[in-house]
Structure formats: structure tokens, C-alpha cells
Length: 416
Image 1 (cartoon, one colour):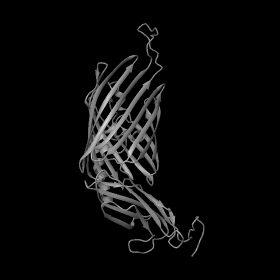
Image 2: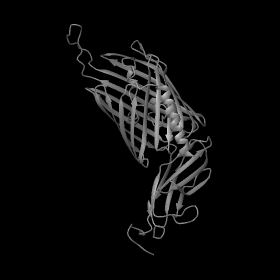
Image 3: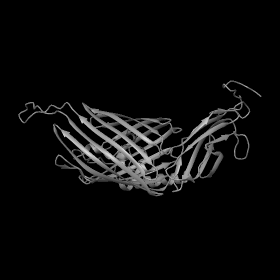
Image 4: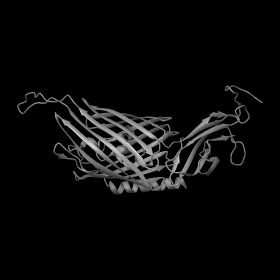
């Protein structure tokens, strides 16, 4: 059933993308418009997907792409990025988000673009003794919450600052966003940037609207996103599309993307426990650009599994494995389910219940019929459903049954 829905989601995604982007023509861009620096990709993960993130909005960069996405996230997150673009130009991002029980989710973000080393001269080409740098930045304060099971809303209040060759000024603006999730495999994001436009140094930033269509396919092994946007200061319609593929058990990913200016991007990511590291490369007008970002998540409303030992033998000393469970939710937990899958992806053992799950479950290596499972690797995952109907998944733990050669206390051979 899930595979069928995933296939239908892919078809819907491709149809919508075809309707919104009837021809792969280079776009006109918004180059030179006030606040252009706020259109640059934030986070190497999103950059590797062509900058398409308004529909997914599933990490701390939602502060920038669609604040409504913060409402769907559980752990506290920190994200940072440092990019050297060209010459003496650098682009940086720092973000923090946190869910708060019965209140919603909050986030703060900082975006900075610094460029120096300009040779400033007057009309007669004589050097001028003024600042030779351009500094632009935005501080964003975000709030988001679920308004019903399938709908989340969010907004940013942002303070924008510019210092251009010694002339400085600041302005305040507001962004708003929404996220609609009719089924777990498909969601729609809407983001209106500069709904209240800041005015800086006599220039008013143009607003814009973005529609994002996202799919979470094949158990979230494949993520796709297509964003279509329209700047109110430019007549052209712009689009971005990208995908992420899980290539190793939620710990290694590859990405690719393209946009209306036919800018091709590629990227990769790694996740170990609570730490993520992402890389993206894109072909820009001035050459190949490299982007690296890092993230860390902790606490919050975490759903987590830890297996110990990870290798056991039902006929040896280590006869079972203990699955330690951490399950915290913003809303009351209604039901829970823990599934153990074999190498073919089939569920061989399932535990379930109502209210909060137990602190631990001991698996003796048997399936639901009480028969011993064969030797091999097994994947374990916990799913909780809260009172609002939202399903949250834990990390995937890998355990191995090795009964052909029983294991002793220190991992050596030992027979009964």
C-alpha cells in the first residue's frame, strides 16, 4: 500500500512540475533587486537539491525557506554554514530551532553576506577614502505551530541591515508560510517572503510567493521537492527541483537539483547519531562553487532507539538484545509500534500498544509466530502516533543474529 502511494505521489509530483514548468528555459532571475542576497541557497543540503526546500522544510533551514516546517520538527536543532563564493565574498548562515510543549516551535536565524576589497574611485577614477566593503545581513525570529493534523503555519519577523561603502541602514519585514500534509508521502508548502516588506537605504524589498510540492517516498528513502516562485519585482516565473536519496540506512545521502537558469547542483550528506555534515557543488556564472554546512540535534521531543548488544546469538551467552526506547512528543502519545524487519524489508516481529511505549523491549530473536529468525541483519524502528494523528519515526537501529558461531561475553567463541 505504501509503495502504491509512493508511486502515485511521484506521478502527481511529475505532473505538477510539468504544469508549472512547461519548458526548461533559462529564467530571467532577480539579479540586482533589493535584498537579492536573501535569495541565495541556505544550507548545503538544500543547495545540493537545487535550493528546492519550501515544500519539505524539514530541518532548521525552514527558518529561511518556510517557517511553517518548524512545527513538524521534534528535536532542538543547530545549523551553520560558511561559504566562500568568489574573491573576498563570503556567505554565512546560523540557525537554531526548538519545539515548546503546548506552544509551538520557535527559531532564530542569521544570514550574512560580506564582500570586500573593492577599488572605490570617483568619476575621474581617483581613489576615494571610504569603506571598500559591502555587508548585508538579516536576523530572523520564527514561530510555527500545528493548527490541525494536516496543517501547520509559521511566520518570520526579520530585521535587515545593509552597509554599502559606508552607507548603512536597517528595516523590518515579515514572512509567512504554510504547510499542508494530506498524506505522509506528500505535502504542499506555501511561502510568502516580504509579506511586509522592509525598506533599507531608500529601497523597498520586493515580495514574492513560492509554492512547493514535496514527496517522501519509499519509506522516506527518496525525498523530492519542486518549488515554483514569483517575485513581485520581476515578471518571470522561477522554479527549482531537487531530490535526495538515502544510500545507507539513514546515514549517507546523495542529492541533485536544477533550476530555471539551468544551474545544476549535486551534493552528499552524512549523519552520525545527532551530527550531520553536508556538501554541495554547483556550476555558477563565475565557476564551480563549493558549500559545506553542519548540523547538530539534541533533546526536544526525541524518538530514539538504542540496541545493546548489536550482535547476539540465541544459542550463545548473549541470547537477546535490549532495545532502549526514548519517546517524547509535543502532544500526548496515542499509540506506538515497534517493527523489526529482515533483509528483504519484511516485518518479522512487531510490538505495539497504547499511550507511552515501555522504556525497553527485549528481543529474543524470534518472529511473531515464535519461530527463530534466521541469521542475518535486521532493522528496527519505532513509530509513535500522537493525539493529533501525527506519526513520528525513530532512527533505524541495525542488529544482527549470529547463531552459527555463538558469542561469548567478550565476543569470543563460547558453546553451551
